[in-house]
Length: 360
Ligand code: SF4
Image 1 (tube, rainbow, N blue to C red):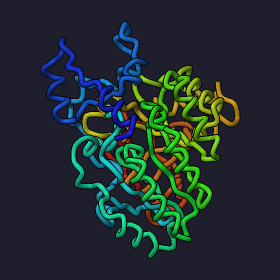
Image 2: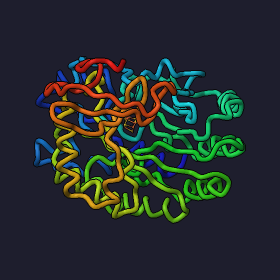
Image 3: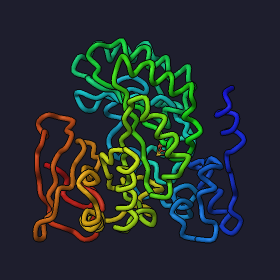
């Protein structure tokens, strides 16, 4: 076992919070708690509303199961266990159900830390599927956290995938940079460097708060950038965490400062045990983004504000009068490609379909 694995085992915080013990026990039973000590130490214990605590500690509101466990239709896109093919050019592999931290706002709460039923266990069949689908030009290795795999497992994926000629690039979805930067070991970096000479490798991560950009995180970011691997961030707008223009602007400007592309900002999904505590209304999110943009430079404004819908990635483009304008950024079916649509603003609406008219 490598040092990062041993340290992680020793570091995991599994607390029972005394004052609300019964509720939180129930929450943890359903959705496990796991916080690396490194991340736990970022919490300001004197602040009951600390944003780092909110996204890592179980919350009493998680007993509310309003919402859905599969908000973007992942089941319907699954071609083999752990292999999804929703957009023609992109394949998604669920490599593990384990994460360094079980984020309380996770949209795959149905599986993280719980079941490995949806996880890819047949690399050979996966490679065969990808090789037979020449329209696929990129693969996202996700989970769970793909860097929870051992170095040997990561290398096995890279070895197989870099042999597929029609792939342009391979992405790793990982929050290790945010919650456990120790995982970016010299050995892992040298594996990434070796295969990045054969195929472009991209890291996709999720910094949600400027306080997560610590010196340790910066050191890990630097190690990855030094080998020419780029890093993209997909933040989520989360109530009580990053929902003020000052905090969100500090995050987005901070990402650019350390060489991370802000890429996407997501509307929080209506996930069971998440929706009630983290999701803002569409209008609140849009207004937040508008105010935040005033504090950003050009590069920090590169992101798109996105909602992940079963039909595709829907961009919230803007507001005009009493209407909100949407556009398909990525469409599952080409008939939706680039399609724009408008909806009358409902101040309480948090999502399409549930709260606004479905897309026709
Ligand atoms: S690391 Fe990603 S998959 Fe894992 S709990 Fe956090 S958001 Fe979910």
